[in-house]
Length: 101
Image (spheres, rainbow, N blue to C red):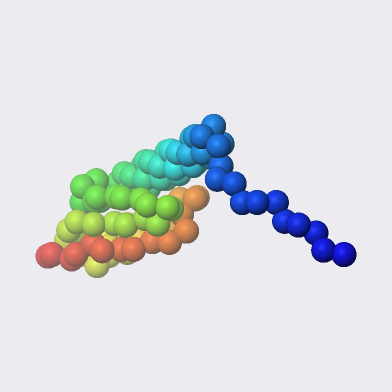
């Protein structure tokens, strides 16, 4: 016995608008979480007490943290990395800090 498949109908405008709004809400939530993670990483860098780490640039995209800037020693590069890794909510860390004595 064969069953006829329902014809493929494009989504209604209302369904399309709702899907777009839901996708936008998810995107906004991801952006806000990235901003919260960046703030926690910056707080962690400040908590080290190392003045050179206060100017490290922190960016986060989809919970991937990127550290950029210049530090005067490899020790401080590692200290920045350790401080960032101590933050909950990050999935990956890229330490792009440049050591410039």
